Amino acid sequence: MDAPDETIHQPVRLRIMAALTALPPSDEGLDFAQLKTLTGATDGNLGAHLDHLARAGYVEVAKAFVGRRPRTTVKASRAGRAAFARHVAFLRSVIDGA
Amino acid sequence: MTIDAEQAGAMLAEVDSIVAKVKRSRVYRQTGGLLILWGAIVVAADLIGFARPRWSIAAWVTANALGAAATFVMLRAAAEPPSRMPWRFLAAFALFAAFGLLWSVGFGHFGPRELDAFWPTLVLFGYALAGLWFGAAFAALGLTLSALVLAGYLWSGPWFDLWLAAVNGGGFIVCGLWMRRA
Image (cartoon, rainbow over all chains, first blue to last red; front, side, top):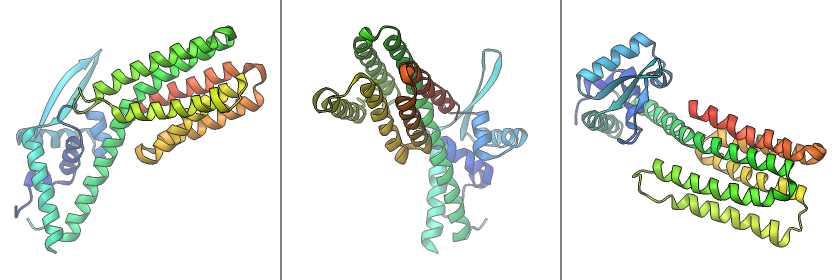
């Protein structure tokens, strides 16, 4: 691979994908609050980046109510896992080629 | 878009840092349930030991059997894949139990108070060691509760079982609740 993934390259989206792909595929994913803590993003900023990743097909966003509280859960899709693996491989190739 | 080696290195370091945090958080979430379970078991068995000292041994044998079975079920459900047997946990549990029985029943000549202090500190020593691999919270739990158990052994007088229920059992429950939110 000789180019970064334009969608994942952005720093907040890189952190989101790193967090989501650290979980096994069978895991339920991370909720919005956990992602906010991990990425250091604001609500609006995180929401916009999740929309971007969902449009690319890299994450699956599920919204549900737990009691009376809305809960947004995010998982990496199979395509997202593959894209993230390729992006990490590209970053390693940059270091190895230096 | 061009990226130099320094930028790529910084991004990979960021990825590694996030992955480590997520994995630690996942271990804490899974372990939190176990700590709450064992905290409740310790509270129940210590309260029985305080109220009915003659039932203490039977209460602990029953509590440990129930706790071990529930722990096995919870670990198996959390394993990847779910059907995998948690052999390492079973082996670690068996080794700790064998060591504890060897000294408490065989060579130790412990009195009831010493036994009450020995088992919790043995288990907490395991947690302190686990902290070296799985997250500082385990080490903090093991060392802090060990110090409190020893303080109770030395200074709590006839209230030692109650002290253990509150400090050891309660400490496990509080730490478990914190870990589930971490």
